[in-house]
Length: 398
Image 1 (tube, rainbow, N blue to C red):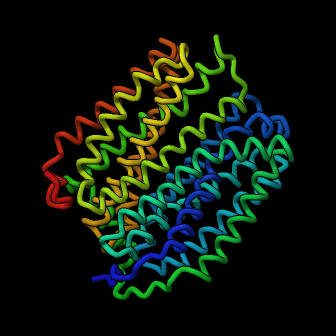
Image 2 (tube, rainbow, N blue to C red):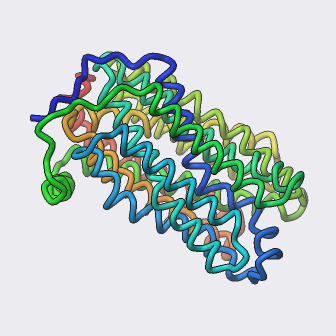
């Protein structure tokens, strides 16, 4: 057995460091979205090719989920986090100095590959937390992820406007290096013994897909983030159109409303510690489905859209934290493998949501996109209802 050290209490300072690592690392993937036009103009990339800059980072991230995150179950996790932070800095540094499109693509792909330090960090935080604190720790760390995803759009846009798009990647590289130094200073040594080999870890990851609890939570995550992706990928479409004609900067401000997800993550963590993870999942998924009634009103009311965005993001992160709490509690000796495998559902679901919402909008406008988003939410709720009995032994909920 691995000696995980669950009795070690994670201090607030360490939790905040974990959250900062997650926020900055995930920002390396999403920062390109609001500055694609500037990048394309500078590097001579046509409009049709700009999407590959974002896709390259996401593909790198997907590969990292499969092959790098499980390393956390077999090597010193503190050293792994340090190494991945520094290699992510190399990736964004390459992007910052790129003078050709292929160099830019290589840089963001490298950054995306090692940005899976986010999941290694989440797994490490869960593993060194006392059981009664695991939910709170996951809640705070996941808040960092939310802030990184949504805040990246706002901050990157501001930096690019003031100092050009390269300043975004230079800043990220510097902050990643600083975080690596703080990990050396503040995080405890990883003293586990009896660590498995790489082949054994990968085999263990594959066996998860035969477990009912894992598949239930994975499918919930798949539909959950498909719904999330349907909103955030398609949101600009109705806001750029009549009657609003909002600018890119104005649309980016909706990301601030999405930060309500950070509050959802924090509260869900506390509820999970109290044994209500499964109840929170069902309630939040119901909220998610209802939120699309408000979000669908985007062409008519920005206030209702704002309410829908806040509720949706709160619900998504509450479910996400609850899922991770249940899975890491069920597999405390291989948190990295569990988190990495679980996040595959997130990645595929997000991609499906992005493709579906743009396709639906082309056919039926924002009403079509909203129906797609609501269907994904209802599908997640159906999976939860079918799998309630699976989660009961872990959460002790009724």
